[in-house]
Amino acid sequence: MTVSALTRPGERDRPIVKLGEIDWVFGVFLCLIAGAGALMMFSIAGSSWEPWAWNHLSRFGLCFLLMIVLAMVDLRVWSMMAYPIYGFGMLLLVAVEVAGDTRMGAQRWLEIGPFSFQPSEIMKIGIVLALARFYHGISADNARLSWWLLVPAAMIGAPVLLVAHQPDLGTAMLIALTGGAIMVLAGLSWKVIGVLVGGAAAAIPPFVLFVMHEYQRKRVLTFLDPESDPSGSGYHIMQSKIALGSGGFFGKGYGLGSQSQLNFLPEKQTDFIFATLAEEFGFLGCISVLALYAAVIFMALRIASISHSHFGRLAAAGVTATFALYVLINGAMVMGLAPVVGVPMPLLSYGGTVMLTVMIGFGLVQSVRVHRYTEVTGGKGALI
Image (tube, rainbow, N blue to C red; front, top):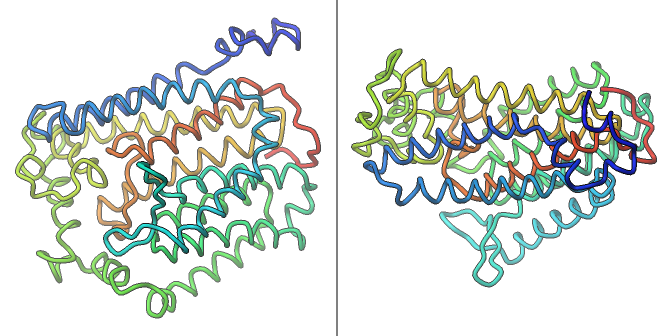
């Protein structure tokens, strides 16, 4: 029996009881992924903790503590704050359009004093919370097929358009796919899903030809034929494939990857760290890390399934969908199965902003587990 099953409802709010309700095995798997990332950064830095490995571990430690703190937050508080967080994220995205900082041709950052951040990261959490709150308050029939579906469509479309205009196609795609996943989990009619998938497929060619920026269009064409410009736009994918293939089954050995150690592989500590792992630890190492990711996704979905509230189920499932999309898109990109869109491998890649977003999301997932018996009022949604 669980701790909650052995305690009276009033006693479940005690901090010591809540700490006992956290899924610590889930936390261990997160630590293993982050630890694997630190080991790779130590290797590619020439067996040095600087400049990446130590920063990666210290950031993860702080983010892990933040996850524990957020797990203590009552699920009703998350529900109450859902729309304000979404609205705040939208205001920040508009602020980026007006006064954002431009770097490398993209206007994605806001600077507040010494701090610089990307508001699109806030929207990754905001869209999950807002959609979970919306679907918690409508009936299963309206979630399946009704004019009410225009509301979540607008909630997803507005931030996607703003983020795509920055331009940040990778993040825009993540927000859109996460929102779509929540709509499906909420019970969206398969007829609507079929129409949307068909419409999206038909819109891809004109979108690539007439809407994308030139450099984005070039990435798509490079993805289709990377050998056409091996020393230019196809360089990233070509080097990544070389690193992947040269690792074989067991890899070249820790610290012995030529593509990464000799700096042939670009962005070796961020977007292409999975290729670095493949070169040094081979197919076996890749499968091991992917198994860790699969375990995290499975456990998070399990947490979603045991929540007594529709809001909790959709919120935990939405965070899990975002995490899974990170893994899927980065893995496909590194293997040359998708265009390069700048989506990192979560917790494995170097980068504080994405790590913070992911761990805040997992703080929400842990909160769903800790408060799984909590009833969030006002819900009409059916079970997932």
